[in-house]
Length: 427
Image: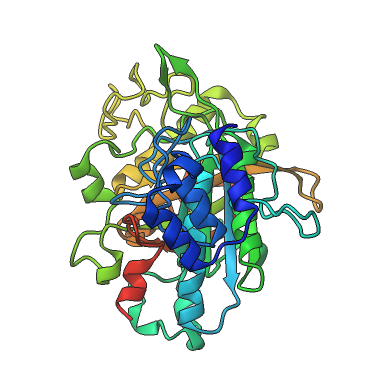
């Protein structure tokens, strides 16, 4: 009989706490349970004391660490982003929610289902099951809290709200729809499989029935050309590369400057965390597709195929916007997206995905575009760039911002801890 079969037979039985302690204390468990059986017994008691990252899992991203996964993690091919309303009425219930989610996230990032199934067939399965047979697919799950969470009186969190965590101001070309704006909690699930990403959010929300409700969500996708075995910068639906100017995610000093909140920057519970800005941006593909290539490149300030700055050859050539031609004209147009963004002298980390959600009923146009996501140590970095783009940005002719949100993403989770513990420890 295999170790797994032994585990399942044990899990079918009912044990008292005293019986379990006797078994584990006697040292006989190693014979009866097998090398992997301790976790199974604890799960049978509803405990996840020893639940940890399974480093032997295939295509695995670690859950525990100094920072949450899904930020500096290599960008995956798919995202399922969800914004939630909170229904709980006390901070103790909110704390229990994040405690309950922690082992579920660990399991799914290990490529496992969220729990051992019932054997009697009368109850619904614990896990919805659509990710069975798939490995972890580099799943990362990132949690954040929105400004509205701190305004719920019953939760008593108002004194812990960081001053910089507030709704974004109105920007030119904003036509925000309530159906895609705001939220008390966000969950960003990214994976190299759309079903794995969806499964993660679905099961977290399902397990929290009565505690949260789904406010809005958006699926997205990316594709990566491979050169010499290395992933290249993905392209958006306008066919331009997206993310060339990102900070170096493997450089701690660069990430500390741009992305990670440092001690003294914000409320203490945010140290090691970051701020997520999400924008659902409709790209007017029909208009873009009628635009000449040269005009498209002047709109972005880059060559489409190479991704190089105008007048240069390679994607990562320096973007010197002050260069002029023999007639004294800027080589990178002053109204181009990159020229104006550079003028802001602010940096962010973009982690965006494309989306396609059918058509806009009122116009019959594609409802397709960009799930723009950026991480920064202060939302002001994004605001500064967006204000510099303003009404001058030539890209405005081809886009409309339909959704928006800003969320404070907790620092990383230590082993034995839970999501958001830093926030609740300061209560």
